[in-house]
Length: 215
Image (cartoon, rainbow, N blue to C red; front, side, top):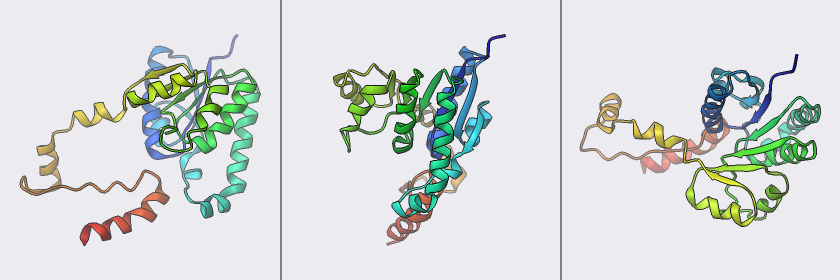
């Protein structure tokens, strides 16, 4: 009996986990028998993915944090490369998280595993040379901003504009209902503080942002 098609999804933060979960839900709707393995969080688990490593193990920022967690990061990276080389993975879907996922994508390419990059890194904003690396091993890229399409087309990478995954969710919100739920008067201005989705980002950024907001 042939084994089910297996997809490996890897993300490293809460926002990527949420976006990847919706992708996996759509994938399973179209291919109910697909086996999804993932580095992700609770959202991917709810979508039916088997979590190999939780994002809490990898959701880190800053050079000091990387150094402190380096043995764990290298162990997880090595185990995932072994999985990709095993022939058990048919498709690799990296979701953002480029410093980690680029290494896995290169391994996938050498192992004849297709690479479908969902939510591509912002090569148009910084470290533009990364697009050349992606051109070597990327089978297809799905981008969330329309202006990203020509960037990847110029590098010879097949690309699809998928739209931002937050648009559908935000468009269903009722601002007045949200104000009532949060106890905010209609005549009061609202400022959103968005420190990031990783716990380390929240711990580092939010106190500074709250202090600035109070001033």
